[in-house]
Length: 421
Image 1 (cartoon, rainbow, N blue to C red):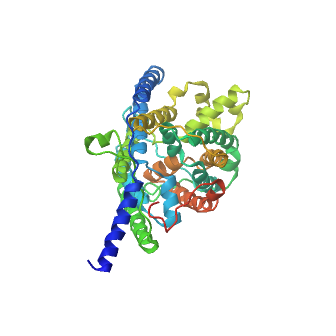
Image 2 (cartoon, helix red, strand yellow):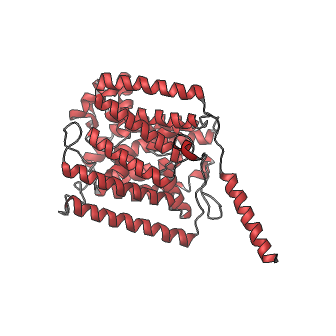
Image 3 (tube, rainbow, N blue to C red):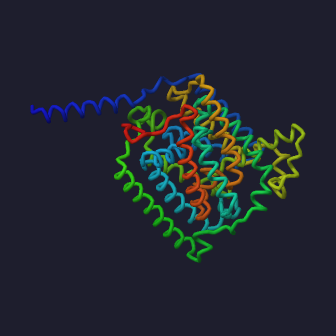
């Protein structure tokens, strides 16, 4: 064998070793935790149906399936934005585009039919573009990189046993309450344009709007390949997994598979609930209820004016978003315990500080920005709303700024010299 051939073989061997070193083996199912998760799911199902009706029971299980899907694929919005801005890896962004393409298709059909499972007319996540959206999504972009996860990421990481995310969630709720308190200033007193739909506001209709969406998604997908090639981006690391049919319940799911499942489940949410999937309005509700219990008159806030005020006096099991949030956490808990991956660990003080700061920024930003990575970005774009695209751009800019802040808290940032990101 020539020296060059030997060198090539050695290089390939080293790469293979590095690939294997990235694969984390699954543990044995944590039987008692799995049983506990199933019991909790049953209790929540009974509570949801008895208090909120069959619709809430269905939404709970849609949320549970969302949690399972998010955890099995570690489907990230935070990590997707970070990988792309830091090293140009667009694998997850391409998964986002597939998810949005499938969701937009299903949403367009539901909006065209103009009815849902329980007879209500479907309502899109269509919100204005203005100061509040720009500021809120930018803050959210910074917050999710410091907090270690976005809104959906926070919930499935809590279910998955990531210790710091419990603190992120608490801070997220507090930030949501502060955002609700300041809602009148940002939404009613700051300048903004009217909501703009790529389907109805353009005169293109749902079919024409769908074609426009597909062109946009195709362009973004092509752009990620160009950026990856120019920056020679490292690949995404492998996840703990198994083989065969067991992979459905244990191990990792391919990103593209998860993207399609998430799109279908969001469309199912729209068809059952009458509005698309959202997360953070539930946080504002929980926090505002707690604030009200402490003697704060939250009903005087503009955020809780009108029909929204009724939710403050009702059970959280009558709120579809809250019920789905509960389901998402339990779904991730089931998935993590089946894989033997639920482990609580001590976290450094710096990481704790980042979790709290990130959660506060996300909570506040979500109220200003009409939602999070789910309500504004995913469901907003799938609803053909221009504000969803603006949210994505500003959150990406926030992510870029956060790349310089993460090291201050002992948090890593992908480098072009990495073999995996």
